[in-house]
Image (cartoon, rainbow, N blue to C red; front, side, top):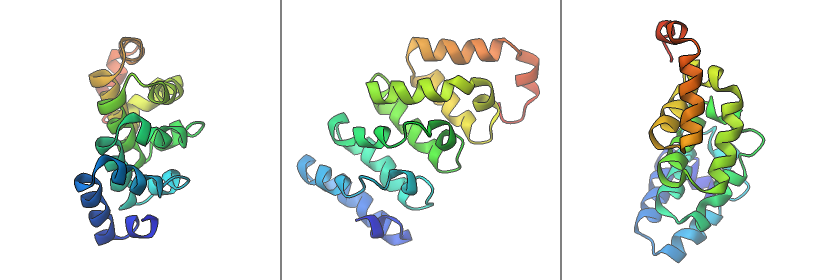
Amino acid sequence: VWDLSCHPLGCRLIQLALERAKPREAAELASELRGHIREALMSPHANYVAQKIVTQLTWTGCSFVADELEGLASKFARHRFGCRIFCRLLEFYASQEGTLRLVDEVLQEAEDLCCHPFGHHVAQSVLEHGTDRHRDTVAKTICSNPLGFAQNQNA
């Protein structure tokens, strides 16, 4: 599953399998990516499989995705492909403990996140789907320098 996930056509096959599989089968497929999530988020193909895991499985089946990002959340939130998984986690599981920990981690550098070419997508997802506490953090960051953010092409 991991090898197919890294291939342009193979990743589409795995995504389709995750969509059509019964919950138990989808969880078994997803478990094949355990230990590979960081690599997957650096891949132009496997990152889509990681996103599909989050959108198709229950939190129990996909929580390992968040677990594998702890400690490096800021790096992946600012990555061309990695930022996408944060958006999916926020869309589907914003109130789950694993997602909360990741968002806490990335919001320690909220100003940089808001102005980053890829990180700003995560900040937008926090504003749209995050908890009140997380939305407050982003809003206060923006309000602390409205002119600076207005003039920043990425904010």
